[in-house]
Image (tube, rainbow, N blue to C red; front, top):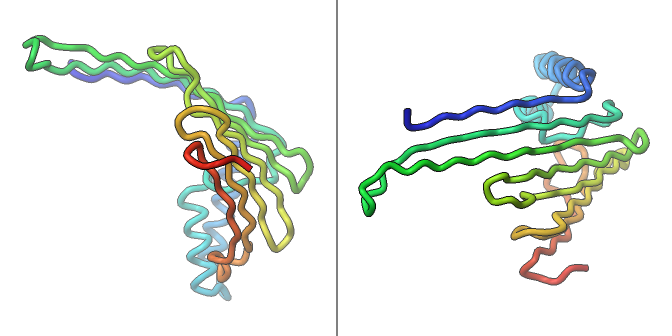
Length: 173
């Protein structure tokens, strides 16, 4: 045995999975519908291929946790012995709708081997009817940063956006 992995996932909102699957099914039905421009079909294909990359304002809250354990053995040529490397992490992520047009998401975790909190992020989304606004913040760590984006919702205008970014290499605010 050279590699072994084990993971567990749990979501505290069973409605989320059902709603997500229903949304994916309805998107797929819409993709096959008539009267859709090629740009609209492409946008729907992109959404249905990765539904986690898009914000679902219909789900009021969701909290999920996952645990991962991995063990790998490899031969160290300098010591001429087998070495084991074990990693285990606990990740938490969730979101909640403040109002029907505001959504807050977060993600964080803990690395048991390094005994430290791993990449943490907070995001705020606002539906502005024809526009979307998002604010993302990674408060600490190597990738400390923030970004603010306002973009058009229309698929034909997907490149129309305004973004402000700053990272730990640059100045904040």
